[in-house]
Structure formats: structure tokens, C-alpha cells
Image (cartoon, rainbow, N blue to C red; front, side, top):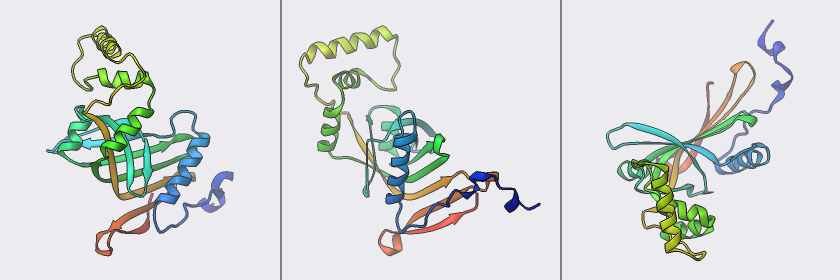
Length: 212
């Protein structure tokens, strides 16, 4: 019996639709993730590497997106901040398990403007702003008590609602050069649609499918 006659009931899942650019499709998938994922649908694995090629990866939260790129925020003196500044290339991987979908984004990275970083920092809760200002992210910490003492010190210096953004804390925007959409299908006959920027055509997208 052939696979086409053995496919289960969910085999009718529609293939990923063709498109001229990746942004509308990403927004549609993100909207479904927001509606269906139980926790942090904007969580994404960020992969960076050192100037000499040593990779590292960690989860961050996507805090902005448009046709310019994908924005996240961090302490620029952290490990990821230092790697992004020394090698401004990175990759993102969104995985929405309940939807059985994944999106991979690769490209170069730039700092967002100070105004953008100020606006986002001000939107965070006071506690989150204080914690960020008190943290020497990624550097050795002798004990939790030491961090608690730094938090108390920052609180004492900023008794009101205003907590200024530390100068070393800000946002990065990943400028996509390649975006791949992956969708689970029966028998591991997964659907993969990739978009790549064609520099020869002034940054227009070219698209195609990949074998699973």
C-alpha cells in the first residue's frame, strides 16, 4: 500500500502558502501562536558566535518586529551582547510545539536607536527595570545575596517610579537575509518554505521549497 493511501486524518493539513515576502506569513503564524501557545509565544532561541566562530545559543523574548527586522533587548556587556558587537551575525529559531511549526531567521544585526531602547525600557515593570540595572549579566556572582544587595542599592537610589535605562542596556535588530518556515506533516514528509534576499535585485526576496 502506498503512503498516499496510508496517510492519517490530519494529512489534509494545507501546505505552507507561497508568498512574495516572509513578513505576512510570519505575522499569521505568530497570531496563531499567541492564540494557542500556553507560555511566551514570542520566546525565541538566539544563536550568536564569537569573532573566531565559537557558537552559543539561548532563549530571549522577541519585543518588536516589522519589515526592518526582529528586535530583542539585552545587557550589551553580557556574553550575547559582546558576541553581537564583535560578530554582528546571528540566527533566531522560533518553535511553536503545539502548532507543530518552526521559523528560522538568519541575518546581520544592528543596534536599535537609543529612543527605541528608552521607550521599551520604560514600558517594563519597575521591578524588571531595577533588576536589569542591578545585574552585571553573564559575569561571575558570588551569591544570590550579593545580587539582592545590588537590587536594594538600585531601589534606594531610585525611590520613585522612574528608573533610568543603563547606558549598556539596549536593543538589537536582526536584519533577515534568510527566513525558513517549517511545518510538521505526517510520516515526516514535512513542508519547508524558504525566503532568501537576492542582493542582485536590490534586496527583493526569492523563494522556494526544500526537501524535508
